Image 1 (cartoon, helix red, strand yellow):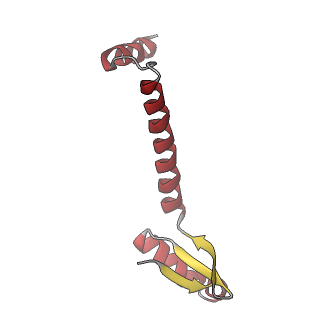
Image 2: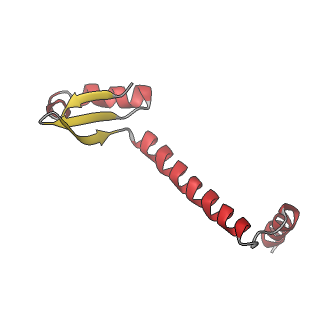
Length: 87
């Protein structure tokens, strides 16, 4: 369940919000005048989220390469990697 707080809590209860974000690895949604305005999360949670987006993007590109017939067999890919590492 999302944690929703008024934006004034960011100023008045920063430590409480920070502790929550770090302890539960979840974002806190901040409202302004009763409407959603910002999301606050720990740096670790943010970096994990960005990492997932990057991975999904790479997987999507790989899927497109497969559809276009540009993919190579895994054993050939690993051989190319090993050859590159041995140079």
